[in-house]
Amino acid sequence: MAGTFKKIRRRLWLLLNIVVVLWLLAGVLCLQVPPDEFWPAAFVAFSLPGALVLNFLFLLYWAMRRSWLVVLPLATFLLGWSYYSRLVAVNLVREVPQGAKTLQVLSFNTHVFNAYDKRVKGVPQISDEMVDWVATHPADVFCLQEFYSYVNSNEFNNLNRIGTRYDKYKFTSTYETGRVKAEYGIAIFSKYPIIRGSTIYFPNTQKYTTNRVAWADIDVQGDTVRVYGVHLQSMSIRSEDIENTYTAIGDEESFKKEGLNLARRLKRGFIARTLQVQLLLEHIRESPYPVIVCGDFNDIPFSYTYDQLARELENAFVEAGSGVGATYNGPIPFLRIDNQFYSEGLEAIDYETHYEMGLSDHFPVSATYVLEPKVAADR
Image (cartoon, rainbow, N blue to C red; front, side, top):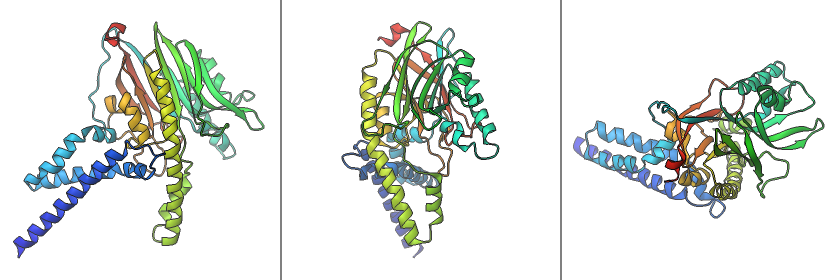
């Protein structure tokens, strides 16, 4: 009897393992489907981390039981390693080659430096701390999304506080709004000269939005690097929406309502970013220089947006980071929606998520790149 039960249990676990492998394969295939053509594929791809984790647990389970069935999750693990590396990065510390030319880039969604929270007691000091943290960071280039600057205010004239005060070159792609005529958008600051810069506007977004791409050609001691500051379509999901969904668990009607609300917003974001990432890639392909593409992509590494970029560019977190690298500072843990990608002619040797700066709804990320010699880059 005990032997029969053991066989049934073994077959059940094997069946579940096969289901997980099929789930994983479906998720990988769905990564390649444009959400504007078939949006349900985006939700399947979004669930891929669950399949990756469960497959790894099956690997441990069969290994501890010393079963030959470990071959199934092990083969899946090895063949799918590139997707596991998107989830968790494992890299050794690398030293800067002697005499190498380097460029450190900081990317940060500043949440308008909490400017609109001034009404809350104590927040002006928080905003000051955020601005000063950015302004004094040792990075060579800053790409700031949801940048805010109010020229007629000493406290929030951030073009001056970050750029002019520290003798940095700057390029901004902003729009002016509100009674105070403040500027919102994307700002690129650099200690090296900015040769030129421009903006990629998205036709499927409103005029007054920070969702856009700013780019700047930067002269790094005789070599030119094009840096893109990216802010793709937001989900428009507030922390309260997620918390309401959590609290609705147990109330079927309320949970269904909140869940459908989140699903609709996710769907709109998936579809909008499909066109946006294609426009971005078309521009990148025309660049005569090595590129660094950084910012708030509002999508996880298991999305059509990320996958399209990863097909043509390297990801700094994957190549030089460690751990999970979560960048969303909100109620959903482990989300990495801020990234830095780079092209040939560059090599990422260091990557860091700055958890010490937790005053925005995003954590800043920085990466250090080695500029490869021109001769080597042309091969």
